[in-house]
Length: 499
Image (cartoon, rainbow, N blue to C red; front, top):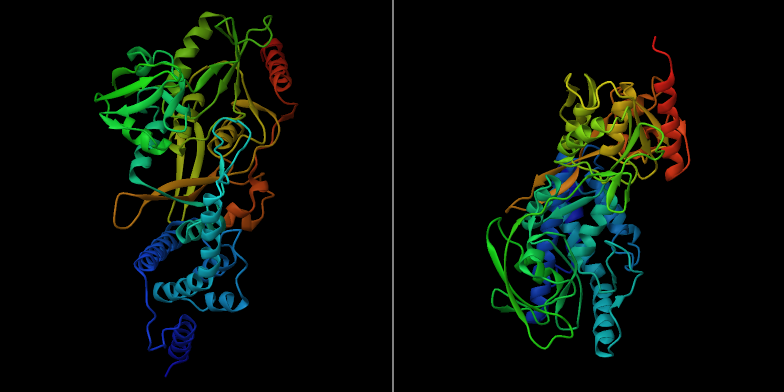
């Protein structure tokens, strides 16, 4: 018998013994317990599928053994740390079958803790104690749920915390919505849910001139039914799912104001809801104001998101600014929402007059992107504002403009997030797993020039983000202070004698 066969047999026997598989007297299993076991077994298979995808595609993946070891000690924070025995068993797992046995053993050890948490939730519900902790009102910040975690939630959460850049399983329906958002082609009726009563969800915000407003929806309306289906007691997700649909289709809502005695029936046609990703510096009585200093021919433009329509919006804005006598431009990338690398390449290509935009390194290849000679704001000096909130494709764009000497960078060092994410098809359906499959590299190909270490050039790039930050050419304060400093630098260029 080979040494490997011997140790695999020992591992199998040890796991079987700890799982109680050697017991010949099966315990009675209630229908509810049987359903829980089936759900947990399915959760383990999903986790194994995710682990396999991480090992195959992730740019800086931990080993299988390290993933399992970290899962054992990184389950939900409310679950006690795993035993040393579990950690040692994880290091002996070399394939999917052994990994399955390990996770089954982990499930068995965590079962009492999960049951206790579920019992606490049940008791809290019976005593009418709130299960949702209220948080300060802040945009896009959901309330923090105290619901006891399921084994599936805990397992997937542990994997996401362990893998550099995180891992997220995205349902096919949500994936389609995300693609629409990235391309700025979201289909809907132009509403946001958030206000309501105990019985009905309501509209907290309406997009001006959107389909809902045109049909007669009023802010604060309660949604009583959608397409003849009562929405009483429905949660936000259920309401949103019924409102969504393909472009050009109709949805019928029965709504009423909270203090109204009668309801209104409205039929709304779903359509594309575009949003601006490029903005003037400020608004002056509803009119866009681009100049920080009215005496300087310098425009300041905020880019809130790098998306599918950003280049088109900038091109339209360029015509207006040229007509207004603008001679230089400041682009504000602070707090911009990162977009897909493809859209960042399009924007860099539009701003550069030739030159290397950057590279994306994956496990199998390095892809280089080069700008053509056509560019926006040709002949106009550029400055770019960055800070610690500028990340990922935003800082990749800033690095491309800096390395090609197209713009002067002003502000503070960026975050240093160079992960390039991809959606990997999940086995057995249309869902996808979002994970970091590549690293964004600036044109200079090193984090801070020729002094970069061999490790930074070769790998482990996601584990040393500080080395990959974009450092400004000129440090400056926040807010208008940085914009004013950028305008001063550009004005000096405009005033400099031609050489």
